[in-house]
Image (cartoon, rainbow, N blue to C red; front, side, top):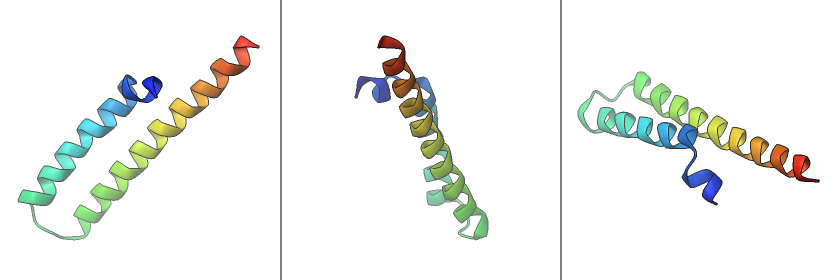
Length: 63
C-alpha cells in the first residue's frame, strides 16, 4: 500500500485530476470535457499499472 501512496507518478496523476474537476465545475459541458475525464482515467490507470509492474519486478529480484 505504501508503494501506491508515496509514488510520485500516482500523486501527479491525482493532482492532475484536480484541474479536470475544476474544469468540470467552471467550464462548458461539451465533448472536450468527456475527453478530459477519459484522459485523466487513462493516466491514473497507467500510473497504477506502472507501480504494479515495478512491484512485481522488485519481488523477482529478491528471490
